[in-house]
Image (cartoon, rainbow, N blue to C red):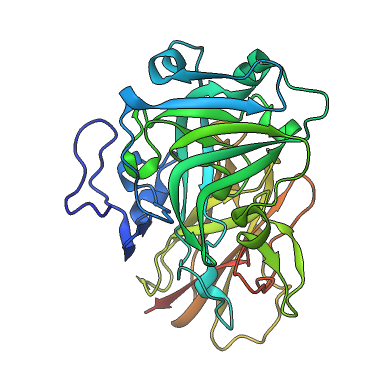
Length: 364
């Protein structure tokens, strides 16, 4: 699905996502939209593996079964009647930034904008799990979407699992609304999973099944795709929590700045699993300056995030005193002490790319 016009109506925006692939449709959030504390729904990046399934709300049902005492199903109207929670959540594709890695791993050539901070409303999954009665032998819930396709020669639906403590966390939602309006098809309508603090592969779209299992799930998207693989082919487990990261939204790449004129450097920062960002540092390096990655860092001012899973705004004033090319850098530190690395930790699938943010500008 690839929209040919800018969306209109509730949640619409003058910014449309920027297409990366058309079949299936994948698109990045436009840079201008990343300046917003909450990314408008019409601008939010789209990740799709197999195409958008036809799933009208009237025909939607979710089945909860497996290692539970009382399996059941419910329809869309029944779900809407349950208590809803609204959360602002950083949504980031696990492959965001892949194009920055050298050599570039295979996969979608995401730049740095397969990310946004989305406002979701939905029903905490634990309400339904408690109704089903989780068996004592259950270790995970497997969530399955209505989309399916051929992967590694096998026909498979999109499915991912969550440990019980994550699945039953009060922030794990069966989302029905985005940015104050019903979900759109490309964002998982009528119902998608939202798991705060984890890469968006966990947020299964077009959700139709939730099965409690007694052994760790070994589906394609859990054990073969979306896993960290090192240069020697060794697997280190599936992608999970977001890594600490920052993004520079201003100035823009190759922007012309004026010597002696104060410039506002600003952006966003986030981390995973509800761990807050505690510090963002900024530095500007002239092209002729000696290489010293430890020099010139100064603390940026932080803005309080809109919730525990939202990103943190930051800003810093900089007055360039010499003409030439500069690289503006930003690095975030979270409350657990995790710091963005100078370079991305390379892996064979290009996941979890979180190097120090960088933008090149020209001072005249």
